[in-house]
Each structure stands twice: as C-alpha cells, then as structure tokens.
Amino acid sequence: MANDLKQQMITRMQGAASLNLAFVGVVNGLFDALHRLGPATPEALAAAAEVDAGYVRRWCDAAYAFELLETDDDDFRLSETGDAFRTDAEGTLMPFAVQAVLGAHMAERAAGLMATGERPGEAVLAERSTILPFFGPMLEKTFGAMFAEQILPNVPIFEEVNQKGGLAVDLGCGNGWYLRALCGRCPGLRGVGLDGFDEHVRQATDLAAAAGLGDRLRFAEGDIHDFRLDEPADLIAMNRALHHVWDGRDNVMRILADHLAPGGAAVIWEPRWPDERSSLRHPRTRGMAFQNLAEHVQGNHFLRPAEVAEAMRGVGLVPEIHTFAGGNEAVIVGRKLAG
Image (cartoon, rainbow, N blue to C red; front, side):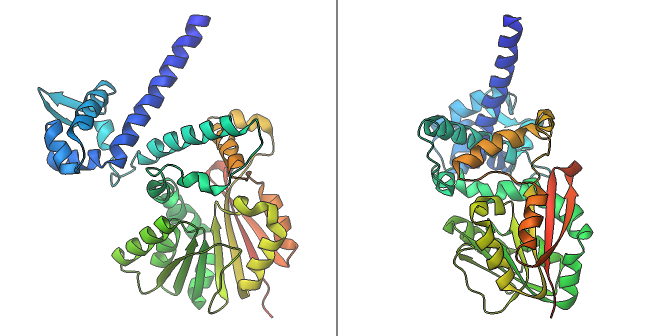
C-alpha cells in the first residue's frame, strides 16, 4: 500500500513538473518561437526568443524529458503536446501552466500565513512578475469560449441592451476580453473597463485597438469603490470578481444599483460554490476547493448564487439565475426596474 501511494505521488509530482516546465516556455515565448523556427538548436531558439542560451539549453533537455519537445541530434522541435502550449494555439493549454504556478505561489503564501491569519488581498497576484501579465490571457483562454458560445446567446439581457444601445461597464476587466467579446457581438454597445492593475489596463487598451474596437472601448485603473461614469450604465458586469468584495456586499450592491440606468442590469458571473460538500470530490469541482483556499489568502471566498440574488433584492434589483458548465458556473442578472 505504501509503495502504491508513493507511486501515485511520483506521478502527480511529475505532472506538476511538466506544467512548471511549460510555464517557463510560455513566459519566455519558447513554444511560440520554436513554432516559427521549426527544428532549431537551443542557441538559435534563445536568439529568436531573446533570452539566455544556457537557460534555454537546460530547458530544452528538460522539456524533451517530459515530452514537450522532440529532438534530432542537437535540433529540437515541438511535440504535439508542446505545440498545444503555444499562446495562440487553438484550445491552448497555456492556462494550465499558468494556473499550476499561480496555485503553487498561493499554496506557499497560505502555508506561511496560516499561523497568523493574515489575508493580504489581491496584491499577492502581483508578487510574481512572471504571473501577472498572463493572468488576463489565462482567464480569456479558459472562459472566453464559454462566454461567447453559451452565455452570450442564452442570457437575454445581452440582446436586450444591444437592441436599445448604451453603455456596458466591466469592473475588474482584466485584459478586456469580456468587453471585446460583448461589443464584438453587440454593435449597439460601448464599453468601459476598470481594473486595479495597470498591466491589465495596458493589455486591454492594446487588444481593443488591435481588434478594431478602440473607438468603442475605454479602459482605466479603478475599482468598484471609486469610479465615476459620464452617464448611467445599461449593463454593469463583474466577472468572477464579486466574491473579492463580498464583505462589503451591501455597499457594493448599492453602488451597482446607483450607477445603473432604469431598465439596466448588473450581470454577475461567479463560480458556483456547491450546496453539498460531497460535490467537492467530483473531478470537475475539486479544483474549486483548492482555489477557495487561494481566495482566502486574498480576503475572499466563493459564493452560492442564492446569496448573490438575495443581496440584489436588498437594493431593489430583480434577480434571475442562469447556470452553465454542468451547474458549476452561475450568471446572476439583477435588473433595475424602469420608472
């Protein structure tokens, strides 16, 4: 039994090492560069990626060992798995590499903070300079298709606000992926995105311009507790962000309601914390249990949709709950009555 458990742990440890190696390749553009080059020596790859050749040679050997690369003599090329870690690969595996290293960072912080109970907040996301630039892309590649293919067509409020036109606001916008998808589908909308990290604001602005949406989308630093709009919003979105400010939910909901135009709606997308603890054992939800520990480091915890709906009712919003991804994701729409 002990040997079986050890073998299980070795397998898991090697899986973690593979994702750690992939993260090094993602951050330094090695998968993308080798895709452009074709078979190449470590020195040629290092020159193309503009990084140190010594590190690249050691990375190539390790990536070959974990089957991310193949080799012929001293030339390396991407394996099928390695090619899937390219940031622009269809169905890219990049988010798994970023999540693995972010998870390790959060685990280390939780281990050190448990004795004191300190909860340093969202600042922990910026403690590793290699992680923050990939946080927005990670979310986009993980949830963008779900939003475009499942949520946008099936939550009526989006088509309603598109028909009448107006302003959509995304609080905690990251790299702006949500507003780009929304305004790309809804030509009647303009968008404003606010985020607390200037790196995210820079990415969002550049990506909107590249998508031809620079005239309809604007991004700035800010948060829900301190923002001003030139006009009432027809839609205010918070994507996987409300739980970050849940301790002040009464004030947060009041702020949302005050900034909405009559007939507008707050659209809250949250991971759905299960009603029964036993559900956490399911492979599709057990990662949420670990992430909830990481959220605690940031001063947060995951929510149940009924909690969000009740908070909306407290400020006069009329809630409706939509679930996706087998019930693991919830979109709660809180409408502000007209008149």
